[in-house]
Amino acid sequence: MWIVFAQSMVITLSHELTVNSNKTIDGRGAQVHITGAQITLQGVRHVIIHNVHIHHSVPHAGGMIRDSKHHYGRRTQSDGDGISILSSSNVWIDHVSMSSCADGLIDVVSGSTAITVSNSHFTKHDHVMLFGASNTEEQDRMMQVTVAFNHFGKGLVQRMPAAASASSTW
Ligand SMILES: *[C@@H]1O[C@H](CO)[C@@H](O)[C@H](O)[C@H]1NC(C)=O
Image (cartoon, rainbow, N blue to C red; front, side, top):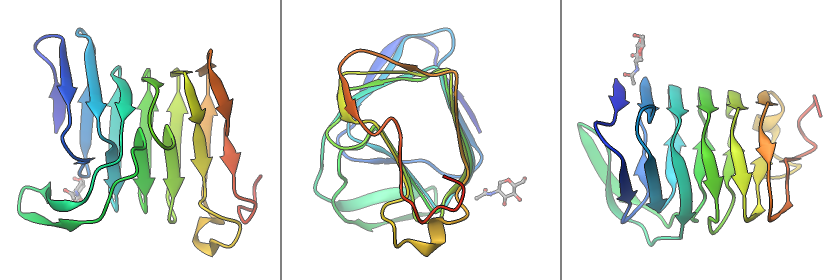
């Protein structure tokens, strides 16, 4: 599914937004801002997020949240990441502008791999990117993440990126 936007808009999420497999979110031709809560990719493949602005994500208590057309269920608290990628692969984050979230701008954990972050712009944030949650996560040894042609702009503090050392390639 290729999601495009007919006009510019600010989407203020009231809880985390879970993205399913085989989705492209394409903000070309409009100014699309997604704020208020994190975007979560969990257990999915083949997702592209392109040309959107993601900022001011804050933590939310969990609750009953739809995660697909056919299912919704109880989810625990979301941390206020920008984009949280868990147990997922083949994800391309491109031409995305991100700033000022509560936790990480992009966290890639729990055995995720084949993730590319390119041509994106990051500003005003403390924990920018985390690849692998800890040095003891064996499932993250195979993680491959490409970070290319990004701009690490003003007001960033740390994790540009941080990679847990259980990963064999860092
Ligand atoms: C994604 O697309 C592939 C290829 O068409 C298909 O095999 C797979 O079932 C799809 N996954 C989901 C969750 O829809």
